[in-house]
Image (cartoon, rainbow, N blue to C red; front, top):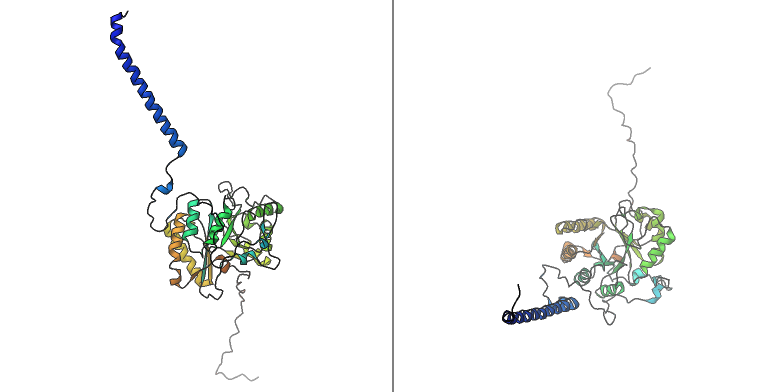
Length: 369
């Protein structure tokens, strides 16, 4: 239908209103788009501006690593600073080494401990540190210095974490990833020791891990149920650890571990975990494992518990440690419980035949022939 001039003029104001409305909507849309873009670029508000939830025991820090210190952290009393004389150069970096004057890294970097202490000793090793910045920082700051901390060698800022741990008084180990029985479902990482590799290849992987940091007293097994049961594979690894003046902690991932026998042969400072206290991660189960460690220490004079870091582990170990001395025991660094002595061997059972019974007395007269 055709529109005349008068009708067109009547519609003109309405058309101008629509155009104005569209223009305003466009401006608002552009403004909203700019606001969204600014939020995406700048990110959410810093976590330091958000009040953390109150914790019943362990106060976790935000999951951001602390800023790298501008200077080396001040070491706890009695803890020695890294010494270049206890290293040797390699293609992977500095490796731990026995000093020319005979000093061993395991003794030089140890936390002081009274050798005259006669109470049963319990060592706790918390491993897989460096994976979570929150848990690692909380372990360093919240656990007693007598708890030994073990760091995964794959992690970034490893040297910084170890420096912070030693500044807080903790003895330090490196986790040693090794092949587990179910490697398809439990990946020990790219440089783990493998039964399919020959000795030189595994030694090369071992030394790559050792070269990632300094200041540690030894290594602790991580996974490794298959590798630790294979003597030809495990022997050269423990031999290399011994010659570098380090200790080894067997995480007891398999009852078939050949580590204790090899350690005795090599005179390697060695400890084996009596309990993996995080097999069941519930708080009740962790408390039960810690109580069992106390029973072992009472019987044997010492005990070793190992666990991967987690919030329940940090909470329960911290709470347990405050009461340990009231039970007549002491929390000790790992260097205070290692041994190079062979385990006690029960003497064989000797069966002694019973003595013949004595002759029976009789009142009958002897016969005379």
